[in-house]
Amino acid sequence: MTVGFALSQNVVFTAYAAAAVCFIVGIRMLSSPRTARRGNWISAAGMAIAVGFTLTLADIDDYLFVAAGLAIGGVLGVPAARLVKMTAMPQMVALLNGLGGGAAALVATAEFFRLAGAEGRAPADTVVAAIFAALLGPLTFSGSLVAWAKLQEVMPGRPIVFRGQQLVNAGIFAGALALAAVAAVQESKLLLSATLLVSFIFGVLLVIPIGGADMPVVIALLNAFSGLGGVTTGFILSNNALIIGGTLVGASGTLLSILMGRAMNRSIANVLFGAFGQLAGGPAVAGPGDGSVRATTAEDVAVMLAYARRVVFVPGYGLAVAQAQHDVRALADMLQDRGVDVRYAIHPVAGRMPGHMNVLLAEANVPYDQLYEMDQINPEFAQTDVAVIVGANDVVNPAARNQQGSPIYGMPILDVDRSANVVVIKRSMSPGFAGIDNPLFYDPKTSMLFADAKAAVEGLIAAVKAV
Image (cartoon, rainbow, N blue to C red; front, side, top):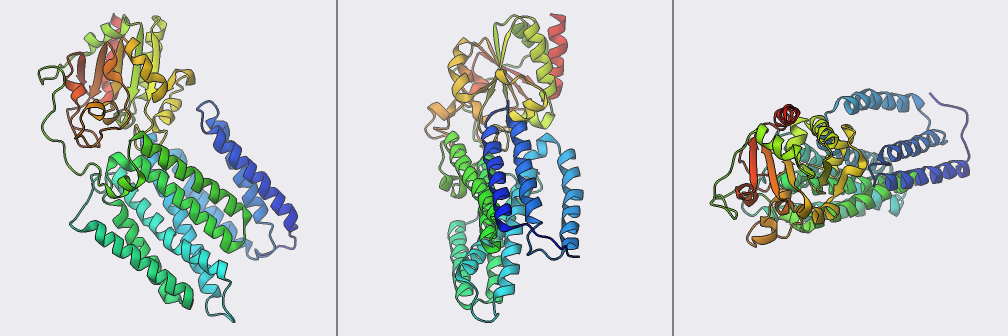
């Protein structure tokens, strides 16, 4: 099915410029919880403009095929976005990254196959872009699938390593580069297909040795890869909207990866090749006390909370798993009604993707002015009566400050141990993603409330009412 009209390229390019402005403004607004929702809508409007005006290009001659693709995408995407649980949001982001990389690989392959072997040689820029997408797309797709499987616990979240792994990975990557170079020179469809396969295998091997603690960085990096895949697709199709959008995604994903790495005091190379979390936690490392933990009850904690001047909640992945954010908000409201100063401390790598805790607390309508980033809240812990840790572990581990042999040594943490009292809501004494013990749990001023986060907070709500 074809149509009989097409807008001029100048009109389309102007629309692309407007879409680019929407992307930039939208991404800028995502930096604050107050404006993030509006920024998301503005970015979506930019994408709608880009897609809508692309459909007016004269190069499109089969709208039935395009409509079918849009319909399939809508049928699959809308329910997935509406029904996905907040705890599964990192998995969804990983899958979306993978689909971006896979789409880039498919477009590159189709265009290369169309041009290769035709009369004369294909344009050099198209061949280079197609080869680059063939290298990056399958890697992003398979790596994202592995990241999803680790987050979904379909496969072990710990690093999967074997002897000589880095040499094997280096050899496979070198092989992919060699195949891509020869495929470009000879314009060989067979060698391009081999490049796609080897890149896919390399993506799997690249991500399996990365542990759960590094998943926020990995997701951000794969997001950057998917953006770069969009750039290559834009060059192949001579589409400015794809080039601009892909560049923004690639740049923001790269910067986010670097910032997340800094938040963990680790380089991107160390994340990719360090097998962080490979060793399970060893014997308990005692804190200032006698090496034993002090269990408590909801009633005892309720008394501390009800008569405190300042309470700081520290959310972690345990809160996300238990879906306890609404209960924490209800408890915080009760304390505020009693005149308690309530705040939330957000570590940049808490959870399993960047901004995970911000999203959960925003879903519970926690006031934005109560959310404090790590640099803002750390100086305040010394004046905090009770720090309540809800499912966090590594991001509050003092070993990062004072144990040079620890895998997380040097990682910036939330200084909860400087509070007058610490309450840790945790189901057991199991270690966090880093696989190491937490000396904070043995500190004499720390009380352990062993329970599922949701059940524990519900118990605290009932106990505070009775105080």
